[in-house]
Structure formats: C-alpha cells, structure tokens
Amino acid sequence: MEIKIGEQRKFMMRWVNMIDRCDNPDNSMYHRYGGRGITVCSDWYDFFKYLKDLPSGYFHKAELDRTDNNGNYDPSNVRWATKQQNCANREVSRIIEFNGVSQCASGWARHIGINISSLIERMDNWSLEDALTMPKGTRLHNRWDGHIKAEKKPKKLLNLYEYNDKKYTMIELSRLCGIPARLLRKRINERKWLVKRAVETKLPS
Figure (cartoon, rainbow, N blue to C red):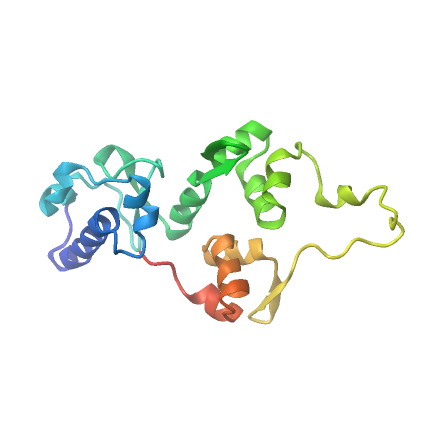
C-alpha cells in the first residue's frame, strides 16, 4: 500500500501501538492481544514491509481490523473497517465460557439457533445462563407466567439513559456511538461516569 509522505507518522504510530499491544505486558490493552496469544507476523516488525503488505481500499478514519478476531496480525487476516465494524468484530468473536465449554459469541449463537445480534442483546440484559440456554423465541418476561403474583406487571427490565434530551436503552446507546454495550455499562454503572462522558469518550485506537 502506498501512502502520502505526510501520513507516514500516523501509520508509524499505529504500527508501534500494534506491536506494543502484542508484545508489552505493561500495555493497558495487552490482555486483549498478547495476553490472548495474538502475535504480529515476523515480517511486520519491519515498518516498510508492514506498509507494503497493508490491504488496498484505505479510507478516511479507517481502522486496521483483524478479520478473525482470534487470529494474528498478518497480511491474510487484516482489512480496513470503520470503528463501528471493528468494535462489532471484537464483540462477535470474544470468547465466552459456560458449563466448561469455551467458544466465541458467534459460535454460541449458532448453537442456540439465533442470530448474533439477538445473542448480544440477551447477554446485555439477561443472566449468562439464560442467554445461552433459553431456546429461540423465548422472551424474558415469559418467566413471569404462572407466578403467584401474575396479576401484577413484572418490573421494568430495561433501564433508559438520557443523552442529548432523548432516552435510549443501553443497546441503542451502543449502536449510536459505536462503543460495546458492556463497556458503556461498566463506565456508567461501575465507574459512575455521566452518560455524555461515557458515550463521547472514544475507544483507544
């Protein structure tokens, strides 16, 4: 791939960060890369070979995304993607362990027979056991059927968060800003960030 001379510094910083995430245990993102066994191919320790091997089709604000999120950084496993696509790829490919079985979210979705977006929404709002065992078509409120207090409406299950004078569910906020719902929930509920800060603080590149 050919890049303009003025852009070399930007690509070099991305290259340095890529290697640091995979090789440096002190890097804050190491647990998601080198800590999971993600490596950089030997040729790409040479910056100019790295540039030469980058795929065509680069566009403004494109991010280098690994096609297989569990695979390594090498010419056969990278593509240019938007930030939203990059985040979605990480979410779909993350490893989930349940009852002694470990597989990626997309694998669990196939096992249950539902699409990946439905599974992610389940995991954002249900317990992990319910998300991975309830059959296709199950709605969370069905568990209230036959309850001794069935005459009362079940409590509201989805919290709404106000942002720019509108109210959103966590999933809707995630789609709006391109940040995984799990991270948004951690920022808002655990770290006690304001919704505006949680939504507008971008992910590290």
